[in-house]
Image 1: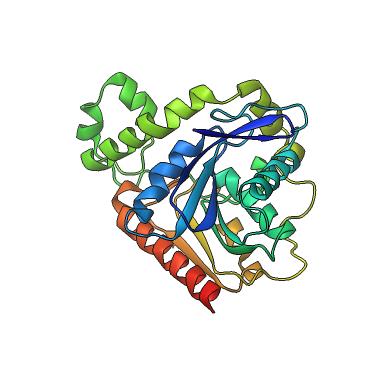
Image 2: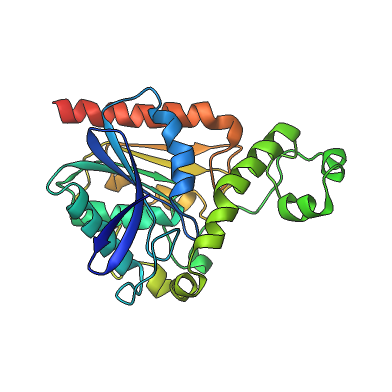
Length: 281
C-alpha cells in the first residue's frame, strides 16, 4: 500500500491504472479491500481510469486522529487527499454505504471538480432510528441445506438472503476475504465514538440540500432487501441528480448479490460510459 501524509495523518491507499482519477470510499468498519473486490473486475478491460482506494481514518491501515472527531473530519481528510493526489483535476467519486455520505459531501463542496458520482447501498440518514427500512427477510428457504452447515456457519449466516449452496459459498468467500479481515483492522474505540452518536456520524450540514442540482452523470444503486440502509430514503435525494440512474435490485441486501455480479458490472460500465461521454463533449 501507499501512504499519503495529510497534516499528521498517514492515509493508506491502493492505486491502479492511469488516466482520469476515480476515488472510492468504503463502508463503516471496513477498508479498501471490499471496494477493490467489487470494482476492479469492472476495470479489467477498461483503460483510462486511475483508481484510488483509500482507507478512511480509523479503518484499515489509516489510523484515527485527534482532529478527526466526526464525519465532517472524515470529509475534510477526503478533500485533502484529493488535493494532494490529483490537485485541480476533475475526478469521479464512488461511495459505498457510509462512504456515500462523504462522497455526497465532496459533491456538495466541489461540484465543479467532480465529473460523476456513484453511491452504492448509500447511507442517507445517519440516525438509525429514523431510517425507512424493509424487514429482514429470507427470500429462499432451504432447511435441509441450512442443516448441512456447521453450528458456527448457521450462527453466522443464518439470516442469509438465499439459502442455496452457490449463493452461500460466494457470500462466505467474500466475507472471509474482505469483511472479517477488515473488521480486525479498524480502530474500534475511535470508530465507535463516532458511530454511536448520530450527530457525529452524520455531517453538520444538510448534505442533501444542494445549492443547485449536480449535473454530472450519477448512479444510485440500492438493494430491495437492504435492512441496514434501505432503499426508500435514497429515492428522496434523486432530484438532486438529474443525470442519475436509480436502480433498486431485487434479491439484494446491503451489498452486491454474488449472482448479480455481471449486472453490477454492466451498471457501472454504463455509468462510466456516461461520464466519459460528458467529459469528451
